[in-house]
Image (tube, rainbow over all chains, first blue to last red; front, side, top):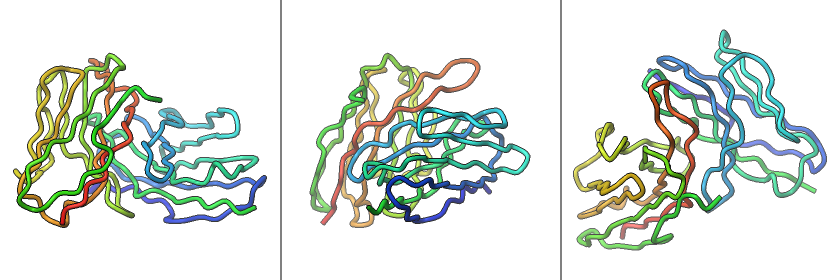
Length: 109
Length: 115
């Protein structure tokens, strides 16, 4: 079957760095996406990885290892507004997204 | 990002009611999606429309009926729902081409409560 695993909840301190991991087992792979979702709002696109390595975009970076079925989202210089859920999703061989349950990130002052 | 809009934002309905959710995308995309999001569970893909043709129906109960009159509009008609159908219903759109599919963009969702 297809499966995406990520931690349910994480807590970090304002100004610090946090890494949110995602492991996956899917039928085919056409890229991995990270989305941010604030409570009561739409998921918004953060990053896309299809090749191994690190993609950096400002304070956010995303890493992919296809051989390990593993990705992480790295958030630097955490701000209170980064408190949200972070969703990992893999595009399978049918170009449909398979989703993890999301990681709720709590930022403390 | 206001490229995908959904109405209503909140809906409370009884089990015998009939209601419809509406989604509109202003991004020029050719594919639209309905997802169900329940607390602490992964997003569940319900329906996919490519070029107005339904290409995916993930074993969704018949009390949910989608309609896609054109590539910019998507509806979800609801009737005789159950309390377990209470959830956030998200609409998304993307561009699909011969080489695959691009990033999906989401609307804000409709928070549905079935009494």
